[in-house]
Length: 69
View 1 (cartoon, rainbow, N blue to C red):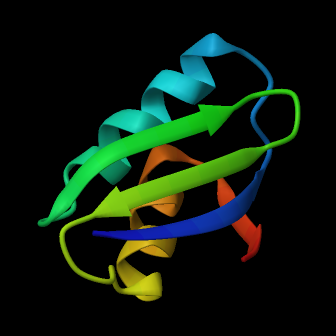
View 2: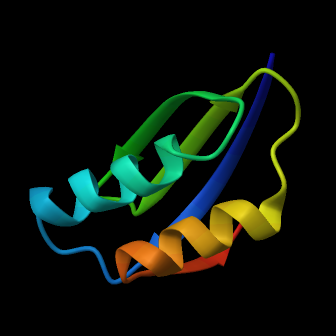
């Protein structure tokens, strides 16, 4: 089990949270996604370490940006 944390910018509402959660959940191997709107925090739990580029691409697909890890 592997966990990685990121900071996502641009989220302003629960719809944003749902969009990011949906896109990141689609990454192969991801077992859980937690998004905190207030802090912009994104925690990704997966079977094996997830590729940072895949997380960044999924967040971008949702319309937001990963500001850091």
